[in-house]
Image 1 (spheres, rainbow, N blue to C red):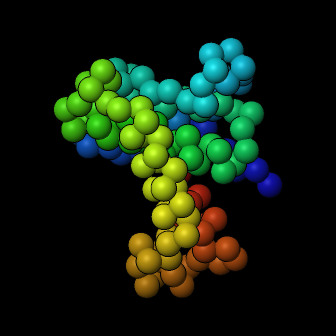
Image 2 (tube, rainbow, N blue to C red):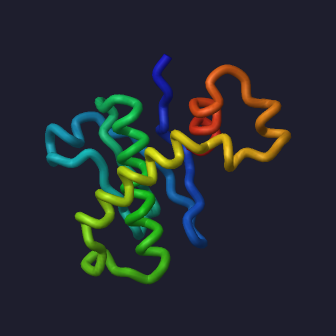
Length: 121
């Protein structure tokens, strides 16, 4: 079963960003995703693999984090965001159990990484 991220929300700084899955974003605009800072919307291409969607959400989340920390879009280094997003995705996926409380660990059934990521998004 493929997870959907559409409508999921991330609290970043004092703002709540909503994730929207958009058909054809990659095909039409050559982008996996983008972020609208004024409306707090993260858009990702709906036709990507689940893993690519996760990576893209983290990438756009880092842009939003920088924006909420006071960096304008022009001040953000796309290459640095790409590199950190890819590594951060791997760190979260491979170590999510460390972030869970004992109660959450007991509640996680099946694959703990998938369950925890579902709750994150």
